[in-house]
Amino acid sequence: MEMAIRSVNRATAPHLPTLAATLAPLLTVANAGSFHLRWTGSAVQIEQASFTGVNTTSVDNAVAAAPVYTDALAAKSEIDNWPKPVLALVRLITIELNRLRQNPTTTFAAFTQAQVIAAIKTEVDNL
Figure 1 (cartoon, one colour):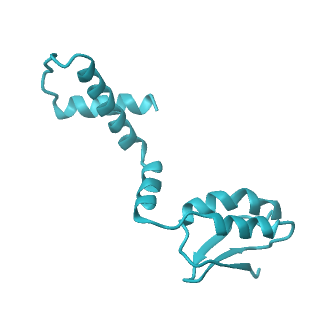
Figure 2: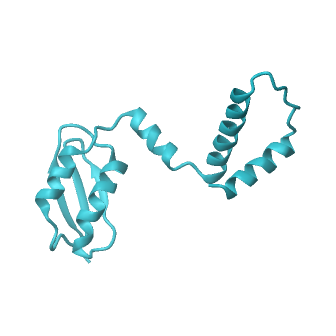
Figure 3: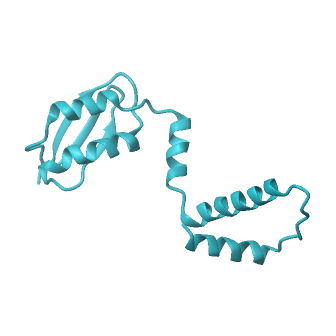
């Protein structure tokens, strides 16, 4: 099956994960399955089986409004997709820091590696 390609001119590289999330509901009306995005240096190319029923003006506007790619935006996007063990570790650190903040004179016993790993596993269940 030949894929349909829509090319939308744009002067700057968009942050593709954000653009993909914005385009997904606009493109699903075509019932064409998944789509692919590519930045060519001067345009965003959208490839999918069909654009039948798609409001192409909305698609073009979404491409124009997409945030510009920056390293900071890419890093933030990666954080949003961190695996559960990393999120659990962040949660555990936050809990311990808040506990220390509430009672700064408290002394804590040293944690063993096994205790920290067990606590992270417990926090995975709380996500």
